[in-house]
Image (cartoon, rainbow, N blue to C red):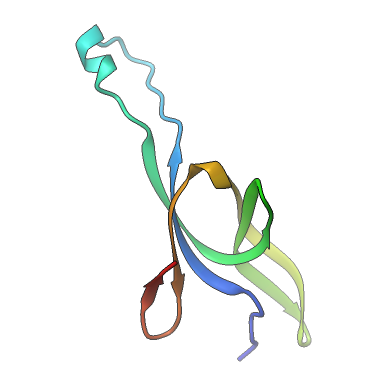
Length: 91
């Protein structure tokens, strides 16, 4: 089995939410941000964003491509839990 040299993570984050239907004003005022959950491996992180990849392709022992990427703004992250084979640990 090939080893992936990145940290496995589960990220909970806020995202925008929209609708195309007509609503009463009171109902519209109750809307809140969506909470999303993304899992994968952190391949890049800086002060403004975190890049998570779900899939890797190998050429020999080297990762040559990644798939199912998501770049999440750090300001939107609500919680981050690192995953190992035994449990999910809080940040």
